[in-house]
Image (cartoon, rainbow, N blue to C red; front, side):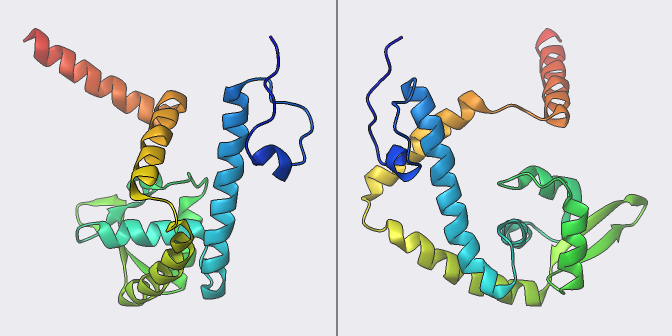
Length: 183
């Protein structure tokens, strides 16, 4: 298979001298590099406030949740980047006064996490810092951004590999749907 010529800026950024073996390979490298650039920009905006991108994500999830809070497992499932130790992150956020834990009456196994007033205040400040970063994209037309989002959604759908828990949940939903159709 003949190699494609090097196009795009990512090859120069990573000092790659050989052509990519395929457009899909070039896309993969470009996506990973772009994700890392975005992550670094957001992380740099959050760092002076003592918050990681993952903690920012959790605060946003908690702000958007309805009272009285969200179970830890659901927070982990809703995160942009999966965190291997959500419990430790919750411990840190509770210790900082940004979130609080509350046990569910009647089921001690379930612990709900909610955002505190301090967490909401900090999140407002963090939102401003992140918006300043995202403002760098303002030179792109809204139609370009919408098209890019649609293309990235398609890439993500084609590549997504569900976790074991997600697979089990989908199988249960499919089984219930099949049983209902047969009834």
